[in-house]
Length: 355
Image (cartoon, rainbow, N blue to C red):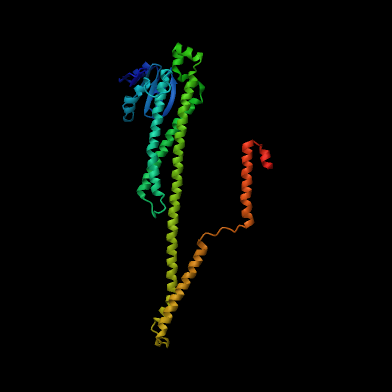
């Protein structure tokens, strides 16, 4: 798919060998690899953005293998108008290769931003449902959704890093930036304008730095979302541990109660044996033994609960003397005032230390 300076579009099919010869390139230059790179060969700019492969010349933009579902809308409805100057490209007054590079970089960064905008509300909604402290269990379907979104976020972070590193490699090489300004070396008029005050290499560097900063901001947003997922996972584990501790404590209390009842139940077992004694003849003995059993069981259970509370409840904070409580805020205010004075009047470090 070929775009000229006026935005006119043509479609054609050619063999690879014919295309190489026409563009003056080698077979390795147009190898179909899903990588990301920006390089110059024989006064041609070769841009690989994974499935988007383009060749830029001072006269036209060539999109290779354009029959891609994710590219059709952009190619057919937006790219031609952008190259013709009807879009929002800031490099319209510069040579054609600036517009072509900006259009491709703008498309790719907007695609990455769109992926993040799709993932962010889904992740926040899932985390809000999982972090609820009232839930005694975790919804496995929500965890599965969070896992899938986490994988998609990792892929997005990788793509943004590769995009940023690709641009950074060009910014570190001054010669490559010069080579990207194709019209400067092919059109004498453009070369005269560059020598008279318009530095095309500087304009190209500013253009690449702009999209480098956008990629950096996008990566920071993805990292913040990743940190939020990690923190939410910690909160989920804390909630589950808290509920698990409550159930374990309840189970322990019931076990101690059963032990207490069983311990004093031995008295009833002893009296239930077929043994003859003078005690069974007194009608008050039954109520006396039953009362002793329940009272003893309650006392033992109460004793065990107090023992459990002393060993499981968190300890109280240490007692702080009243004089120390009054001195601490005062010291804090002195430090704050000292730091404010240092920041306001520009005092040296040694002066602040002495104060």
